[in-house]
Amino acid sequence: KPTRGSVCINGQAVDKMNERKLAQFRQKNLGFVFQAYNLLPSLTALDNVALPLTFMGYGRKKRERRALEMLTLVGLKTHVKHKPTQMSGGQQQRVGIARAFAANPPVILADEPTGNLDTKTTAEVMKLIVSTVRENCQTLILVTHDIGVASYADRVIHISDGNIIRTEI
Image 1 (cartoon, rainbow, N blue to C red):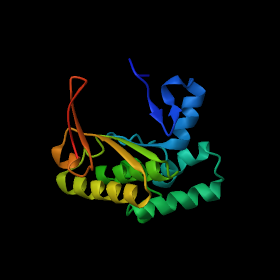
Image 2: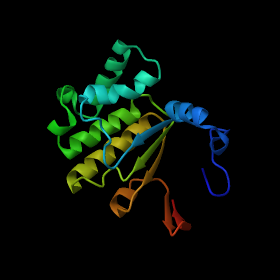
Image 3: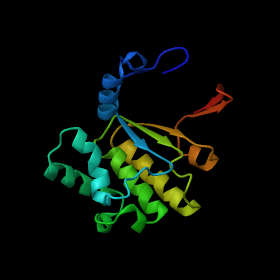
Image 4: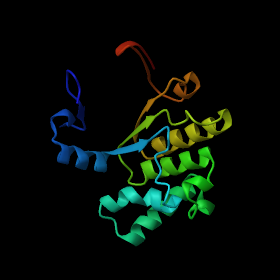
């Protein structure tokens, strides 16, 4: 909840929603890419990607088919049975990206999605995220301290101590 002002997404006052409505809104409208991947260690890549679709009521076959499509898109078709500990950081982040995009949400929130990756993998991951967002006409809101990562954005908002310093287009 904001300390002041309001948050409206697609005409809906998100800050006025109760926890149940907010959870439903997130489920239908938001995909999350985390810096620390947030994959469940006991699940395979396929199951990690399919998990959010379970809560949306997708049947098992449809979930697994969509998860496989997404893992193929991120270049991990051969890793569907791998658990997070059997994958590199870049591969785990690609699983996280596949999971965020699986339900085709209108908005993707990415918190330092390349913070744990090397320079080469960072470029690969950012190209993948940007191309997927553009192909699906989605909005990407990305938080980063990395100027190189920010260069992928159409608009960059610089914030310091909670205040907007400047905006670049």
